[in-house]
Length: 392
Image (cartoon, rainbow, N blue to C red; front, side, top):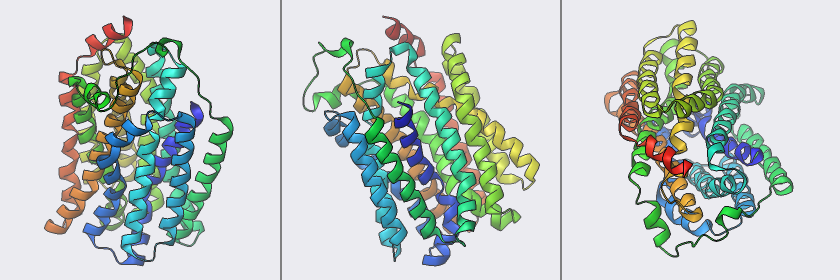
């Protein structure tokens, strides 16, 4: 499971380091702000359009070989992007990379259900958060270093990412394993579109998805445009901005396991989500308004604390009443799709808003408030009923 989670967060590392490469890409291909926004959101379009049909179709496949095929496709997409002679080819490469990312997702809930009892699911999600923080945060620190090492060659940087993914693919093929969960052996699985209807018929699944949309909208906007803002507005280098962003991601990853466990054992998951949502808004606004490097590191630290909400919210599909294996795969991918909706809208909204008002700082300031959906989700999700379902 650790190998699978590492492969998944590595995909997000590549997606989230675009902001570091974007100035070099824009200079090479002469991109407008709206084109930059399109590039930042393109990897999520396929997730949004194909998440449900892909999860329905691939939930019948072996999680091992589904993952291997998705990782192989992701590797090819990275080399396609590194070759792209024009904007449209790069855009298509990002789109296909996003599709490979979402195609892999049905394997995660199936593997989790095969290997872990319900009470340990939040720990698996916490481990995912830790790896996300370490790998994505490490990527944000490493990407500008690699970019400098290659003489500002974003194409060579993407080729290095491609070789990294080739190694992950081979590792997974060697080490990845599946098994049969005895509890699911006699479960009658619905067929056809009934799988989708039952999975999407849960109120809390939609509320949890809403919580993800707003928070990931601001996250996607910051990752795509914040390095540019700091460079143009305050003359802060890409390497330093990468370190600032990485601190928050690492803190959120490591702290996520502890905060999620505290929230679930105390029975106050909703209150935790509301407090963390308010903290996220405040720190996002602060990071837009100041150019003080010490203050930015402090704000990024607490922004990372706010991102510790992730394991709490992503556990929602696992405890939906009466959820069965293929339905769980669809429900989990729906949740991840909603994160893609937000991450896609963030750069898109920011890019077009910047072009309309000619003010990137104001655009990022406004998008900082979209995390209010996390506060709304915290006030409306029925966590008590989830714990009772898990206990029964």
